[in-house]
Image (cartoon, rainbow, N blue to C red; front, side, top):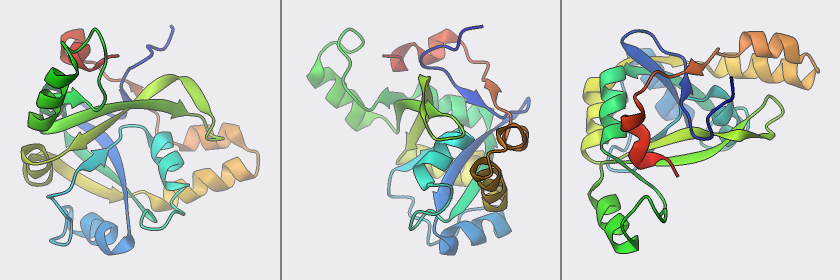
Length: 197
């Protein structure tokens, strides 16, 4: 089956979906320990969540980039995730999808969430032909994410290091088995229609 150009692949259960974020240890370690974001977490900034483990590895350099040394897997409610999608705006203007650039700017300013579609990555961090969802949360969405939607937070930095070590050793089969197994996320086309370029 052909991969859709802009689709959501994720680890999910009947009630939750796993997203990833990378933080400096002073934020990531207390979050994983307490199961909630610490006071030092800045909820007034745009926070980007990613359902793709490999895209998070690409973004964080396998947890080696400064300020991104701790990789968190955050289980959030599917209800909250879909609320964010429903209330999101594309982060860039798309002719044919938006009435005009001014209308898109107004929508972007009001939206509590925004969406970017970035090339998905393979184990060597090379881009794939299909794109991966990046979901930015701000204002109401960020508060709901922290206070209502988050079910569990796990530090998966050791997993990231193990997968990376296998990739470096050329053992892609073992790395592929160890990495989280993401499947197409079941979402109605109507929920993504305003977000697909």
